[in-house]
Image 1 (cartoon, rainbow, N blue to C red):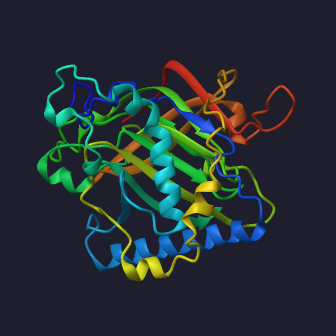
Image 2: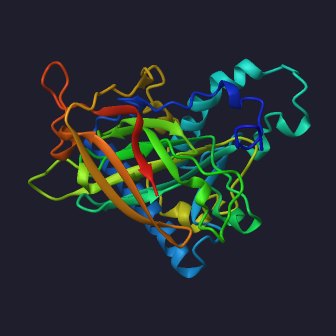
Length: 331
């Protein structure tokens, strides 16, 4: 681990950790292509769920993996690898050939790096609980090991937003105390509402979820479909494995060249929209972590109550970022 509690890698200081968005990361406009992407997300979600039911909660195979130098075999693997490439290429290029005395273990190793990916397909009136992404199998060794970056790509225009708060864990995982090192003040909250083809990137150490309290109200129900990719440098999580042959058979989109062409590599990566807290309203969320009840309190603008945050042209915003010295607290 490095001095900031990340898996040691010489590229770490050059990665972009702030919450950013590419509003049109995927530019597949044909309806049949979009339906195919959703079908494959559903198949991957079913495969992941089935594996977790058969085995223990943190068993091998609960997420999928493609290595940095891997060859994609289907559209979702291609999109995962493209996500890895775009998130890391500038940092890796800047460190290529450098020798700053970082030590052998900290040098970027593509054989131990790659994209951990999975999908979520839920009703748009359901939510994703608050959690940290990490290699949960290593908790039993007393450490919290997180990806360098987390990403979410939306294949929907509905459902709860992704909400990220700047609460990391400590490197040491303390099961006896319920990992109390993760508790404390929140000074930043980033919010991203689903838009088809949009991708967000954020610090892989931060607490996040998709609370229904901030979802836009829809007249008709539908599905919230997301494609999740964690960026790992110099570490492969124990719980991630490549698609098996049987799982690969369930993927309908196999043309990886076409899938790569859906990615708009020129789409600008922008910061979330800065928003002020005009009329503060308290929001309370309860969840369980390390077998302990936890509560996160956030003091955000009253417009978050009914999703009425508008831009200068009167349109609903896609992202929002609130900052304050004491925006909330995790207890």
